[in-house]
Length: 215
Image 1: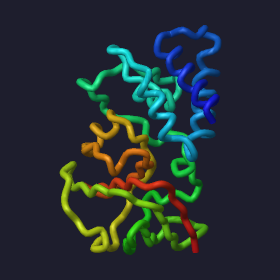
Image 2 (image 1 turned 180 degrees about the vertical axis):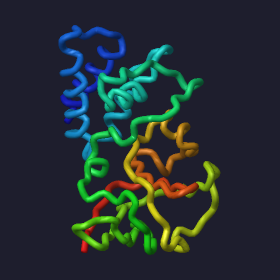
Image 3 (image 1 turned 135 degrees about the vertical axis):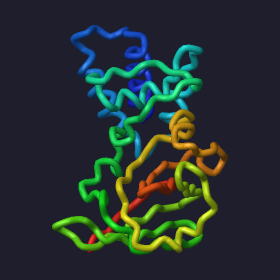
Image 4 (image 1 turned 90 degrees about the vertical axis):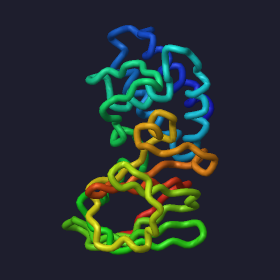
């Protein structure tokens, strides 16, 4: 994994400073996405740490790497934390969750329950192939519930019969946390960030992993 992370950092740096021949740019984006997919489940924290260590006052390399996931047709730009893009390509992060073929878009949450570590979501699927699903987030350290972009203290177990507009996974990097209006704290470091979007509301879940059973 270490050598793959080294390569990801090298490609990110080279793309940021246009240090790649034009005829190799598309291949470099594709390789960056492929290697990210291969290291993410096991080494996402180390990857983000290494990208964050590529210090330069003109560049946020974590953000640049993330924008590269959307491919060369858009062309990422260097940012600093004083600016904010209109949107970030969360769907483009090549993880097992984002690429899960059993998507839950436009499905309905029937109930949510949790124990000391795990969060279980019972879903009525909008699907021809399966009717129900149980979505589990494992070793949850923290979650955030927002309405109209405002954090609200809320018991998730009171959620019933709510339509999920979209869901996915985002990287735990400073710019994404700022974009999603999530306060950085020790409980979310080294975790994966999963999001569920509803009409006028959102849940952000910080967990080690996830699983889904369909019925």
